[in-house]
Image 1 (cartoon, rainbow, N blue to C red):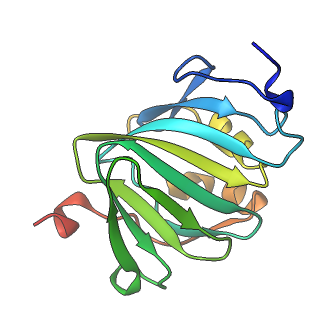
Image 2: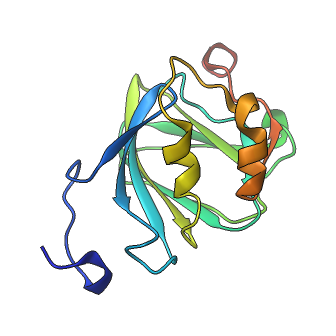
Length: 162
């Protein structure tokens, strides 16, 4: 394979994968691969893997839904005031820095490509590790070290899927 920094192909699930709370992700493209310009991971989400409502001060975030359906909350101060949109396979979603957002799969699972530019956030994900459930409140200091600020709780499946 050609070195990815000079171009190349990375097929799904051929790169190192990591536990992140109650799911796994593949670090498809590292910040070292792109001289800090971009990071990309492939994650299989489940209904309990929704992050809390948050925003990034240092990078833009984007998602491509590969399989399943994912609901996104974007741009409000609370879940109730965010624009809520559903993304199906093939959808591209953009979350600029400083825009509040979260997301949750609305199918049993969803595979999503998640990217950040510039690419400096991946250390947070690899550092958290596996757990039976999310414990974001235990990592707020580390998140803030990466310029990520939690502003509200994650969506609760039963509240949004009636």
